[in-house]
Length: 113
Image (cartoon, rainbow, N blue to C red; front, top):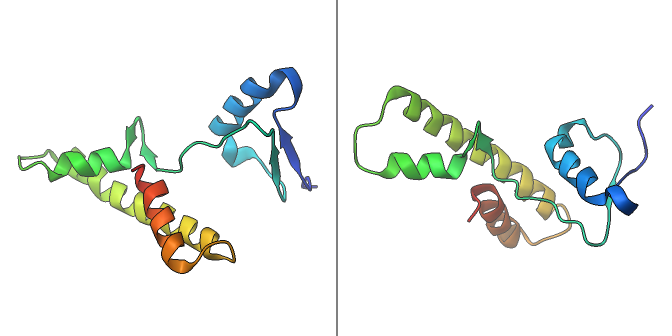
């Protein structure tokens, strides 16, 4: 049975619970996540391994010869950023933001800039 709500960060364990939640957000299930009033969620910009997707794309913009692995990571980065932007834009525009503002917010959140 799926929980109707999930409360993160009450009392003494707030910081460790939030840190753990960020690492394991994909395991959280419920209809809503209730956070402490001082809690924040991190950025949604995609990461490929230890590298931000936006940084990989910036690296391949430098005019030099890139190895195949870097070019493959750049292709994956473009796709990951597109996927995150699409999700954030749809979420933000579903009655929360105007489409133009939702698109701009999605770009900023997905690229980390």
